[in-house]
Length: 122
Image (tube, rainbow, N blue to C red; front, side):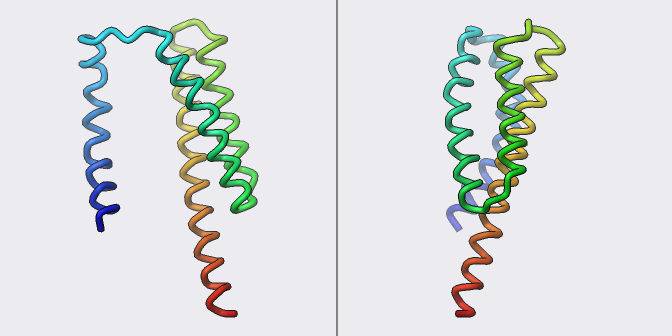
């Protein structure tokens, strides 16, 4: 129940927080290097999570989608100048990484459910 409550608070608060980001950005100046540091932290963590999911459920497509997303994020950060194209590439990369993580989570839960059914039937 506590996990559900935390999830509910997260789901309700995150859209409000995201809506407030532009207003906060007008008050607090965040250097461009911040995005690069976050990316350098996120890429290895996402890679570990995606590889862990692959090892657990053996489906390759979430790893490929996540890898493409990480590639787009890095392209947006390192190869493109700031503007509409960079923004579109970065947002698309973030969406692909999020979809890959959601797919990984779903496949891992499906695997766990299948394993518990197999254990019970033995």
